[in-house]
Length: 126
Image (cartoon, rainbow, N blue to C red; front, side):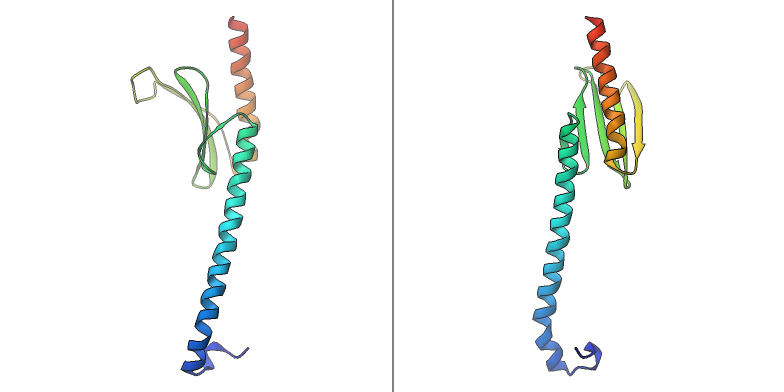
């Protein structure tokens, strides 16, 4: 194919629809890959017993009527923390960081260990 800069104006005009189609197609491929990645993250989170807050970005688990666990992608890293709120208050009365990691797979074992720990505490309390 000839260099685009050396083409006559009418030749360039004739190529524009093809270029636009290719760009649109490239965008669709990127969109499909991103969608597949989000679906994979969502499946991993569901497998760990989490609820989807925002697909591919935020997951949560209810620990008790006043505490929740959050997993969120912030600035390209995954952060896991627990917040406790008194009923009717929007500000957390406590916050505990559970872990951080570059991939969701890095933090899911920490989430599982923490949820198992909470479940064992609840089991021993009864």
